[in-house]
Image (cartoon, rainbow, N blue to C red; front, side, top):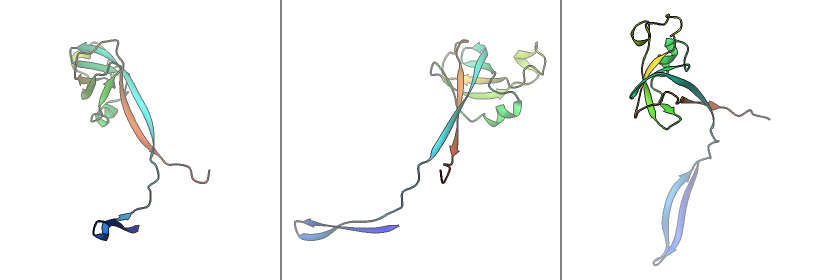
Length: 128
């Protein structure tokens, strides 16, 4: 850390203008982005049943706070993972693992694709 004192000429002569300190520059942060995508299975206005994004219930619960974004610009959030009851009762329980309900800010299309952006910090290789 370097301490600075800035002096300048004003109408009354040489006066103190500013004081402060200068810190060493921080290295740039390198971030890698991955996008998980899924497709709507059933659409009812703003509530959508999603599939092909996750393959187990624990992953759905882990990523619940992360925002979803559709290709058409709709934003949404995961409401709940689907289990062995509800709208998918005609399917076997092994086939519906990873399905979840999500709420969006507007009406969704069944042909839309929904993504979730994930970021991971990458450390630069030293000596290369």
